[in-house]
Image (cartoon, rainbow, N blue to C red; front, side):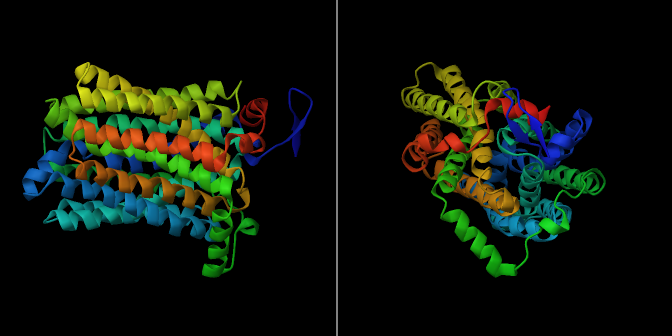
Length: 427
């Protein structure tokens, strides 16, 4: 089915284009609540990292590896769950993954040492990977191109509440309990999400569109994706932008609490303020898509993010302006990431709608895999402001370099529909 665009062109009407505004809103709320389990799992225990160091008598770098474990589990889990969701549908892998997350969260409560906690965090990551990859695949099942980017921006508004609330919630919980209580809360939230997934999400991949053929067919699809230079480049861009974000996530608690003297509650507020910038940018992206293409927004966002990252490094190295300069430059980097993260995946996935689950899995695996490398790198470099800024700036500079050298902006012109198609598909 097609509809007429404002300029008289026929635009294919995707399944999402047949949804009413109320149905679209419900979809965003359901998927947003499901994806929120990932940021909550990653961020909610951040205020407790120094306390975990003291409790286990270990080092900051060792505790940061528990964050790396979650990101690694997310990366590997998506590679497995993506093809599985293309073969059996979206709902079953989603519900099973969240259930696994619940079990791992309960076991984290009784972890006897940092090594066991790290292993269980890997299992947590494997579980929440289902929510990440299935939600992305569901949106791709229903929408395409710029409309995908627009809905993803709306989805990021809902899921963006999680990184804002997570450290603040964690800090609040730490007033009444120790760090283990954070994992009790995560287990309870996981149980609620199983109910939401079971009752609030219909199957979006019909049986006739499911991919068969087992491991061999899956490897063929991954091979085809990896041979697509533009797709791989855009995936790397998304991953490197995510690396900058997770360098901030991994280092911020030590920088803001130990170096700048904020307490757990103040850190939660400062961290949440940064997330506000990220969310505001994702919603501004919706307005920008009415007048500009996703590829143009991506190029400009990475340019701004690169400049802000280098400024952050300069402020951290010189101490000029103190904490306010550090936070403002971080805000700009996060805002640039908020513009890049919806558009890079939308452009990448627009090339492979026939294997949305597998393509989403590879995208997510690279994002969280690169993030998993960035998190401990901050600890290895010293957990200070310079170490964090160096990795944040490095991620943004590398993302810009990949866009210019591997993707090449001139190749992006045919990857997404014109901006007016966003209005046709999403309203």
